[in-house]
Length: 235
Length: 243
Image (cartoon, rainbow over all chains, first blue to last red; front, side):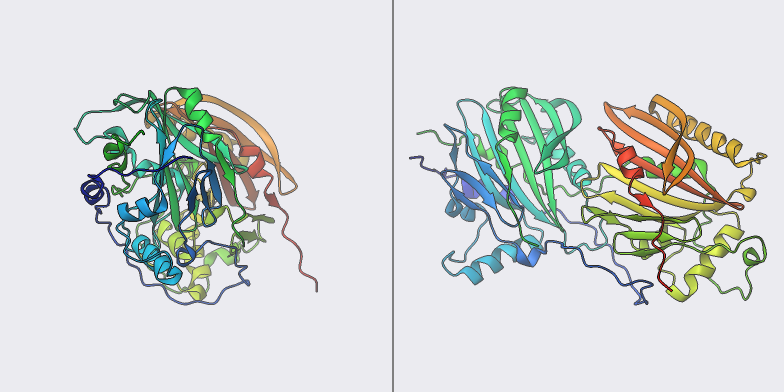
């Protein structure tokens, strides 16, 4: 039976981790106008429907994002109660309505939200899934590529020491859940991070799952990617 | 029991850096081959547009959700919900208007753009991943400054502008093939090309359709893997409405 643990300095970390950057709010005046043809309404996941993923010994599963991750053998993970502390969630999960609302509000306010963290320190492997939402910026064009590119700054300097931590960054694609997704792959030079990294995002409506993977080598990274699987997220 | 000593650094990575980044796809190439729209034209009503007195009167496409229909060029495309299409407000802005043109004035405003030798961006869509993009532009090629005797030479000129423009922007041209493709049931000129910068490869196709003096320029872009022909296959003839 795996157990989860949380370090005492997590709260301090969280303060840094959940800091927000101001985003230029693009404003516009939209005029109502007649539509020339009736508009079909495709299913678009709404941030109000966001629910946190389930976390247990088998891994992670998010109905909202429509995917799950099988926990590799020998990995440890943060439980949901621990990620709630990281996310500074106050509501009791037993109060489902209040708990869901607080998580949704956090995302709506563009606060950082850690969905999942698991890894194997001995192997230098880990996986982090964040969630970020852009519903409050309706004019912003949302693509997985552009979300990845926004993050290149901190990806290049993971520990914030103003020195490059990665090199040989290249764009690749990975087939996940039957769809080709862009993924940045790179060499990483930080103790405990293995040697190779991968970074990708999964878009659902205005919300992104931001996924960071570290492994000993390319094979390890690919093995972690193979741990993802599709869930049916309704329509 | 292992603990996450390195979690501090890992979690400190959080996605707080929301800098806007630009996505460079083939859609930008339209500027290399088409007239540049005048900045912020004023959409004023013209009682009788000149364009309607010459040849077949052009009409503009209509969008509905992720579908686009252009009866004039006899093409339509339907994209699934993994695609995002620019709405009319953004298209108006791309076309140089300072804001959204009222629906009742759009046909006129866009006709005026063509009459003034400008390009009209009719459609722009990208996949939710950002790996694939499609753009459609329309212009009056009789007003393009570098005149050629026929549409084929105009197309060749466009391919040369694309390759030169990419080189000027520091991209390496990996290949460029003048060919043809079947799009919406018609065989059309098609320039397949790919280019690269910093290890990232864009695979593209530039397709021209011609009606009278008007040209529909369609650009397809696919990053890393090549899905250009798949995107061309999305186009079909408009479904005729029952009378």
